[in-house]
Length: 139
Image (cartoon, rainbow, N blue to C red; front, side):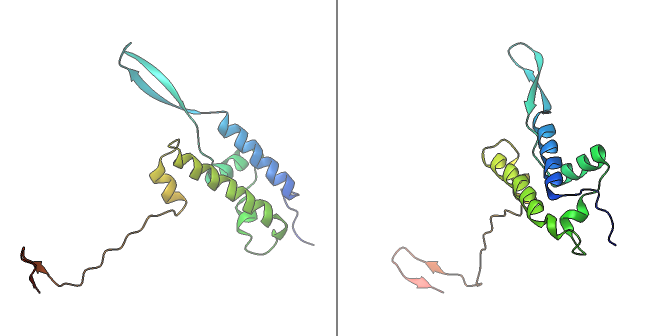
């Protein structure tokens, strides 16, 4: 007989994610800025992005459950959870990418977290070409 799963169904895992999402989106962080006009400190609310690490911490703190096994599924014991785990990962990634694209989150960090890298490659063959005004070329 297999071990009893702490999260009994994929739907229960998804409800845990929705609980995490509600908590994160309803509890902004604050950035303190000096208002030049009034010389007072202003608290600017900042939306917090969804993260996989944040979801894992939330599940452990609130439900006393470690969810990494459900997502990694190394032994195949959590095959029933594959679809919902994939969907949760996509929701987190979409929140980060769209937030980075509109400048809500730091675009540079968003790119690195989601392996979105702009690559450019410059090749140099070691030859120097000199072109004179009269159109003659010397290699």
